[in-house]
Image (cartoon, rainbow, N blue to C red):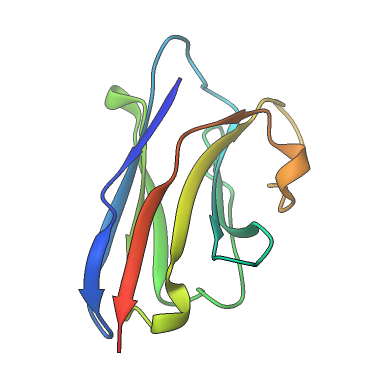
Length: 124
C-alpha cells in the first residue's frame, strides 16, 4: 500500500514536500516514481528513484527545482518541490516499479502499484 501526502495550495515561487509511505511489504530495490496529472491531460512522469543504487531520473520540466529523496527506515520517499509554478498544478501520484534491475522507467504503464493522489495547486 502506498500513501501519498503533503499536497496543498501554495503561491508561485513557493515550496512543498510530498511524502509517499510504503507499507505492507518491502519495496527495497524497486523504483519509486512520482507522476502528476492535470485536468484534461495525461498522467506524466515527474521523478523516480531506485532504492538500490540510488539511481534517479527527473522530467526536464522539473530538473533543478524538484528533488527526490528517501528515508529507508520509514520506507518513505519524498519529493521536495521548490520554485513552484502554476503549471505544476496537478494531482500527484506515487507508484512502484517492481523490477530489481534496469533504468528508472518514465511511463505510467511500467509501474505496478499506485497510491492515491495528493493535490498540488500553485497560484500565480
